[in-house]
Length: 84
Image (cartoon, rainbow, N blue to C red; front, side, top):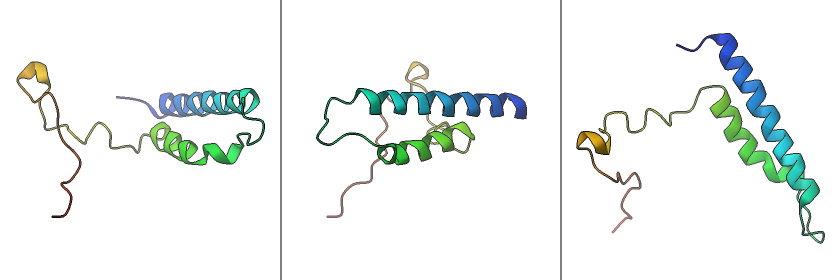
């Protein structure tokens, strides 16, 4: 079980590393006519926050599906079929 302090430390470091990556990308962007801005990373920042706070359901999505090594399927289609 993850303690509250461990989760807070992980969240802080994840956010810090993401901001460092965003800063690097902005500084190194080769397209000077249309440079990257901090706003370009807003959607990713929101996703990182969800992951860092442990509110993501990524692990729960296919929890009932066995792994391929346990005779489970190699691929699970999670996209609904298009409307006919």
